[in-house]
Structure formats: C-alpha cells, structure tokens
Image 1 (spheres, rainbow, N blue to C red):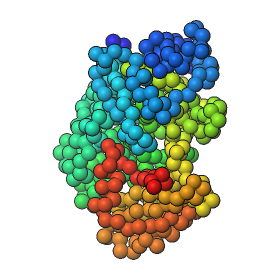
Image 2 (image 1 turned 90 degrees about the vertical axis):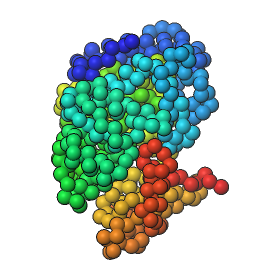
Image 3 (image 1 turned 45 degrees about the vertical axis):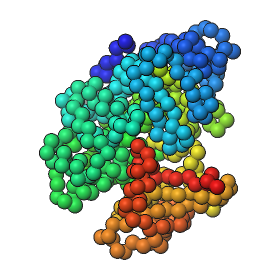
Length: 430
C-alpha cells in the first residue's frame, strides 16, 4: 500500500521538483488507465503508449459526468475483491455516481483532507466537531473524519444533528476545530450568541459545500458572521467527490491548495481550451494515485479560477479561487445572467431570514426565480415585498418571493439530500 504522510507537505518543494513528481505520477496514472480501466483502455487506444509531459495533458479527451451514466462500471479499474468501500455522489446535478475505493484509495482520501486541515491550522491533539453525515454512502463525511484521524486529532462525529446538540458539545468538550456547511455553522453561532453560550474554543473552522468568499477573496455575509464569532478561524474548502481530492485554504486564506501529489487542476473555457491564471472557466481535475476509479480530465461543472502567482505561505501548488457557480445553473433572468449564489448571498445579508431555497422555472431563454423564505418571528418588519426589494438591490433582479414555514424550508434544504440543497431546477419538469 502507498505510504501517505500528511505531515510531509510536498507543496513546499521547489516548483521544478513538484513538476518532476507530477510528471512521473501522471505517466503512472496513464499506465493504470490504459491497462486496467475498460473505459479508458478504449479512449486511449489512439494515443501512443509512451511517456507524456504535463504540458501534453491538454491533448487528452475530457471526461464528462454524463459518461458515468453511459458507461458506469467500465470506469472501475480493480477486481471486485479489491474494493473496500462503495460511495455515491450526492446527485445534486443528476443521477448519483457510484465510486469504488480500494484500501489505498481510502488512505489517500484521509491524506488529502489531513493535508488541508493541517495547512489551515489544525494540530495533532485537537478535538474536531464534525457536523456532517457519514451515513447514506456519503464519502465526504468519511473523508473528513479520516483526515482528522490521519493528522493525529480526535473526531467528534455528531453528524447532521440539531444546533442545540452541537452547542452542548461545544460547551461540554470545548473542541478546537469544527467542520460544517457555512450556513449551518452561522445558525449555530446565532444560537450560541442568542443564548449567551460560549463556543469560542474553536480556532479552526473548515467550511464545506457552500461559498465562504467572493471572487476577490473577501468574505461573504456568512463568512463575516463566522469571522465575527471565531476571528480568523473560517477556512474555505473545495472538493469533487468523483476526483477524491480536496483543496483547502492555508492560514493565508488566499485560495485553496491541494496536496501536490494528488491532483492536477485545469481551468477551461466553453470550447475546452485551457485558460490562463486569473480567468474564470470550468474546473477540470485529473486525480493522481487513484486505484478504484481513476479519471482523466474530469469536468466538474463548477466555475472557478486559478489565483495568479505563489502563495505567501511558501507552497508552490496552484491556488484554486472561490467557486463562482455551477455551469449548469447559470440563469438568464430578464436579460441578466446570474448564478444562484448571488441570490443566496443577498438573502444571507438580511437579518431575520431564517431559512430559504430557490425554485427556478421557465423556458430556455427566460428563467423565473422564486425565493422561498421562512422569517424569524422576531422580525415583523420583514414581508415578501421587503425581501424582494432587498434582494433586488443586491442582484439587480426582482425575484418572486414566497413565504414558507421553517419546517417546509428545512425539509427542502436538509431533507432531500445528504448535504444542504438550496437550488431546485424545475425547468425540465413537464
């Protein structure tokens, strides 16, 4: 089994050594694809069996999520008896994809997250409250826990539980770290403040699944709320389950690093051409050292960019900037192109909005957005029209606003997937 050591951060190697290391791993990866993956054996048949440079990566075909639906089991590159775990993607953009992990893949997964946690400031001996699920074949929850253990810290697996339950653990055990979705962590912070409870033991908050920063690296409203309670603790992360690799902000909080020996990121335009640093395009990832489900140039569907230059932390790995949105979720509302995240940022900035979700209907050239909102009873000044106007001020778009109960909102956001879902695309429903 491959030895992964999260305490030996290869990102600090000179650029030339990282390039040499990645070139060797890339060619080993191609050999594995060619020899063991039924799908890629056919795809790579027209490419000569030779050594390739990293610069030639862009000559290889892109793998789309739809390929999983079409070819399924042909992506698995190990015998059945070597599969240690089967996971599934969340399915937020389509049919959940099956992902096979060998024992080595699980060790690799732990190494990936542990490396990111360490770069953000977690330390061996820390106690880390995990507010995300490990059940329902959700690999991310297992990755976070495994990463905590791999770095020498202690995981507290409280999972998808109530704010009251997490607050009790914060008061009783006083963990130094926490992992969770920013919107949930913000709710937890508001609960602590409202009830005069002290949760300030946390010094590292790893934020998952939702944007924490804008494209200029400034904090979103959720980020500001977390930072006001846990100053300097909040760190953004990014991961695509299919690639089994994650990016995490170091203590500079200026873009996400991935372990140097695990993944090669690219940013592509709509025609599949590689974009230079700083330009926004689709994130395409080639994971390295994966056994069970190796992928080549996987199209994530997420829009982002590589931050130009080196990080002040001293690492020489590319820094992935904040996610701008999902390619498939770009909306056209009354002539304005807008991502759902723009609406969520506006709603997060309105005191008294307790929970919310978006529903989108309409034809191809004209989308209609309905913001479904539950209001805290302590804010009688809020109405559907007031919310509509405040959202319009931030987005230049006036959506429909529907007031719903807190129970309805939570059912939509937390009850239909293993992670919070605030965007519901109804455009294809007949």
